[in-house]
Length: 216
Image (cartoon, rainbow, N blue to C red; front, top):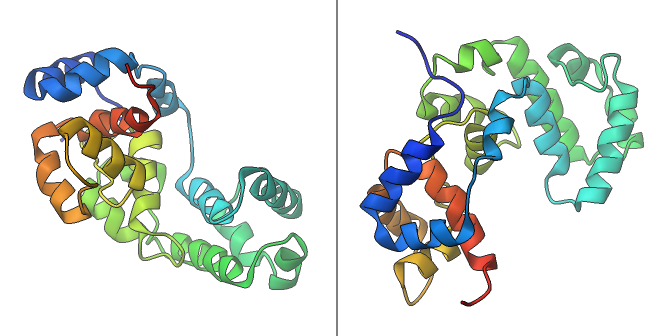
């Protein structure tokens, strides 16, 4: 067993999607290459660090979140990288002084605790887990939902067959590509999206871009 590689063959995925769904294929040709995303799949990362940042960025503007993240980085001994030990040792008072809300303080502490307990996989362990296993284990952490894990699967791990059915941008793009009268509900999108397997990740990358295209 070789495990799951980070990333997949984008050229093969493009050809497969365009052949299987000509409507999506026309949008793909209009939007162009998604090859830049492959660079993200080659960058090293640690799950705890990535998830801690995802928690801190939730429900904040990019600038405000970046300010808070910078303060927390300076607070932790191993900053700018978030480690399980640092998160467990961070006191509520110090995190509060950095601008971290009570809910996020609890989420960061839970993340550190579950990472030390082995619930949060290491980056090496992720290679041997299925998408479903990763979602199940990481959503056990307070403050981490399915969408957050799907973003890790797509942008960090490059798993090929991820379709975030709850994402409004994806649903809007699917509505346009498929010529629907309204945005499909998540369950309906899951069924409709079967046509893009086994490369639903690349389909998602294009669907996000479709609503931003100017009318031709």
